[in-house]
Length: 226
Image (cartoon, rainbow, N blue to C red):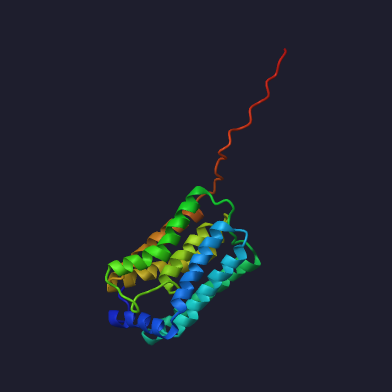
């Protein structure tokens, strides 16, 4: 389905966002790096990571969808509302019920998928955009929906199983929607969105099996006599 706006309008939204809100993109990128580092080094601080994700989804709803994207499509009000719902779900399960908290240690599949998605969201995404000829300020940066959704998947797969499945619904829906921009406007970096969703869902929804310890099992004591 082709979006109801032109490629020029689409990229102009990014340009106006960056011109009005500079240096917010740098701050948001630093927050993203900080959340990943905290999740790896100090997973006991799950509430800080969850709170950071909540803040990012509120930012995208208010400062991108409502403030800028509404100029090209009224559907931005719907998107913004859904992003606020996602922020509420992350807050409820990450800060209140604590059903969304980081694992320690993270099992091998979760660790690998999370690292790949986090690296792509923060480094690979802007690199691919640059290689495809997109130039600042008319380019999506971290803190905008698509790369931030990928990082959200990364942090969720690092959480203790079972993860509340409801927190995956809106990011997955956005990943599917983002393909339309990738196909219609040549935003090739967004082709990673459905891949990220599939990888995250495969890890989160798989039957959870704890990794075997590297230590050998204890030997039975030697018994003498009859």
